[in-house]
Structure formats: C-alpha cells, structure tokens
Length: 275
Image 1 (cartoon, rainbow, N blue to C red):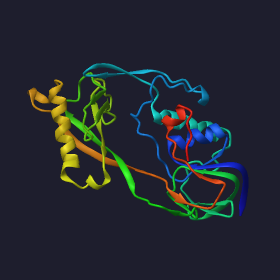
Image 2 (image 1 turned 30 degrees about the horizontal axis):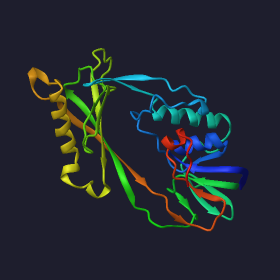
Image 3 (image 1 turned 90 degrees about the vertical axis):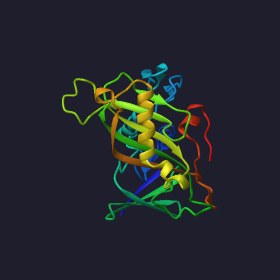
Image 4 (image 1 turned 180 degrees about the horizontal axis):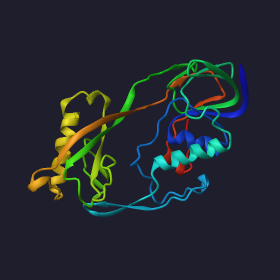
C-alpha cells in the first residue's frame, strides 16, 4: 500500500475548495465532481490577482440593455484544477474515490480496487460526500437547491439576448447560448437553460415542475418579442433537468486538526475564511 505525507490536505469538490487548496498550497482530493454552473459569472470587480488570473469582463445582452460580468466560475474552477495538477497537488485527479479518516490518515480507495494512505497535519473538509470516519453530523438535510432546466428551442431560437431575469425564485434567470445541436449553426440559433432557486420540500410540487418552467419561459420570451413560426409562441422541448442540493456542514468531532469549512468563494474573494 502506498502512503503520502502532507502538511495540509483539502477535501472538496466545489470552487471554494479548489480556491482554498490553491491558496494554502495544499494537497487536494476531490471526493466528487461539482463543476460550477457554466453560466454563473463572477462580479467583474473581483480582483483575481491572488489566483494569478485576470478577471476578464464579458458583456451579456439583456432586454434591459447590456450587463457586464466577469469570468465564469466554471472557467476559474477548471484553471485552478490545472494549476494544482501541474504542481502535483491532485494525486488522484478526477478519479472516482471513496475516503475514510482514521488516526490522522486519509485512506483513498480508487475504483474500489487501489488503496492509498495520506498522512496529514491539517485537514480542511468542504464536502462530506463519499467521506467516512469524520464524526457524526448534527444533520444532513439540504437547506436549498438550484434547479437547471435545459431546453432545446424548436421555434424562437434566433434573437439577440443572452440573459433574461425575473424577480421570482422559479425561473429566476434564463440563459441563452448558441445551440450545439445544429451542425454548422451559421444563423446563431440558441437553446436555453432556466435557473430556479427552490426549497427541497417543494421539488415534487407541480408548481415547481419543468412544465411550469417551460410555460413561464415561453411567456417571458413572448413578452420580449421572441416568437415562433408565423408569429406563434416559442416552442421548447425539455432536454434534461439538473438539481444541485446545498448542505450545511455541522459536525461534532474531537479532532483538533480537522476543520469543516463553510466559506463560499464569494467570501474568499473578500478575504473571509470560516469554519
């Protein structure tokens, strides 16, 4: 059995965990893959010098005019994983892992076959999925969830907009992007994804279903002058629904060298780190 010895070890899968591992020059273990939503953008005013990145401004077209945004969180996440990999800080890359803690040693099981031990000085945990032996959680109930409904636009695919917004949690945002389904898409036909922020208990209600997000999105598109063939309403077909739950890490543990991190990437950009 192979063993590594490291001073600092970070377990996580989201952008905040990758930022922290990079800043602490720590070994980084991904317990699952949690790539940020590709249309989630940073505030263009965020300074990314501490990550050796330039927060390049982008412009989105909305019904209210142009909107300036920074880099997408997915881009920052991918770049950080590349940097960490080049520094030899991601010994298992994006491979499927199961993790168990015991006596300041993290045992890593790859694909249920290969086993490695990592002895650490300090451990920072951002996500407890697929992690065992870290104590008993006070609760493991999702506090909220983001729902992404991806639609193929059959009619009403040609327009100038990149983003539409509403004041509601259901279909809070609609992002339009050049359709990858159409070979040689010279007309710039766009598909779309809606973003909703829902309570987990409401997920199975009909009012939170993709039927309602489709109807609301069609109405929103019509209200901004987007129509289907011969002036009819736009036509959308659901491609897939993705649900991302958010949990609050609350653990009872007597391990002095283990920290359960609660900081978000936004807080880290402002210099705040919490556990």
